[in-house]
Length: 171
Image 1 (spheres, rainbow, N blue to C red):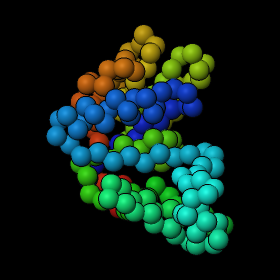
Image 2 (spheres, helix red, strand yellow; image 1 turned 120 degrees about the vertical axis):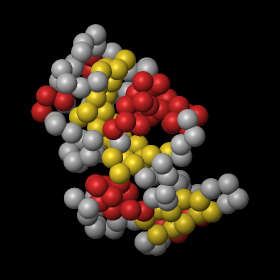
Image 3 (cartoon, helix red, strand yellow; image 1 turned 90 degrees about the horizontal axis):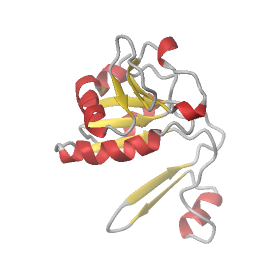
């Protein structure tokens, strides 16, 4: 398993880019999983569903399964948010894990930048950024630069720069 991050400010296009990278990497024969960091509360089940009743009744974990998928919900109930290393250890083996968010984590990243956001680039202050996907017409010194919509070249970068998961887990 190899891992690489896609980091940038909210609204930069990280999710859109990942939605283009996954089919490109799978077209190349790779299996892909993702981890997405949410800065806000989120819910995967809803009032009226049995899983919601189980969870809100106090269950620490609720696993919902069908013939097509399963989902495991783990309630932290005041415990600290698990770190990226722990979350990576929970995944089944795949060729690539694309991590959306987790800017402060020490994993190699492709910065995703959109000029209309008016936010500064991350790469000048983050040595883990190994490439920049942007809509700005610039070349980043010492790092590959890609147009935001060029999933083929960005997938090439993922192939070339994603690190073995063991390197991150053992740091």
